[in-house]
Image (cartoon, rainbow, N blue to C red; front, side, top):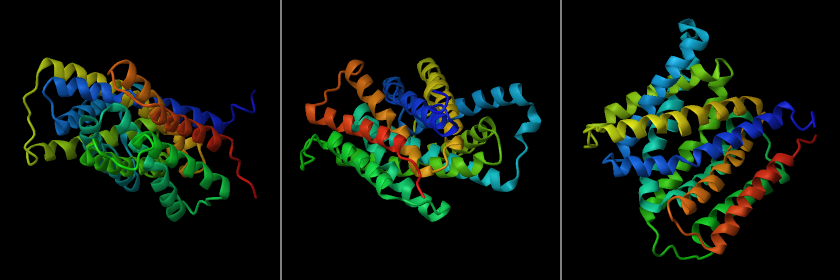
Length: 299
């Protein structure tokens, strides 16, 4: 039992936990949208509240001196905030509104391919046959879950699929930037700075994009909960896990546990319908997570 809970497996479980909590994201987006917030404002509220939450927790836990980091770490946090939080949040919010909770979450699972490619280039990771098979199974499951086994995407929003895929690309870089920044500073500090940069980017983008800034009580309440549960808490699990996993290309596969959680919530809470083929695709995604977890690095 103790061998099962080694550092690598603990990291995998933490990333899976973070992914499962992310599966609730669509519910918060829908609630905020019903309160009158558009995609840009939803993303800003998430990052602004998340920054405040993490700043308070970080200072209370480690003191204000913990916020002192070197320039390279700060730049990594800036990229993490800009691309993986700021741009990603806007794209994902648009995808949820256009395609629904479950399908949007599934589209994010193009991320393993992007992460694997980046890991080979940046960290010289090797993609052996078993890992390639796990990645292929993961992507295949995503395609089946999205299309329901149909080659035609008739009836589905092309823009929503595009937004979801681009969101997956931005999300795939989270493991890369998170690993770089996390090697030099604590998870809480990294999260605090990344949320700050994301909030600043989104604040500057709201007016040029013509987004509404008419806040109401509902927006503030749901915005705070959105920042607390599937943001601050989820990313703490995720980043802690990422630091324990030696191969970044594995991370998005573990985090695709989000697909399962989002699909269940989409059906039970939002009344979304998935056919048998879609469900089979989700099962394949789960299988790819398990397959990746039992893959051992061999010399």
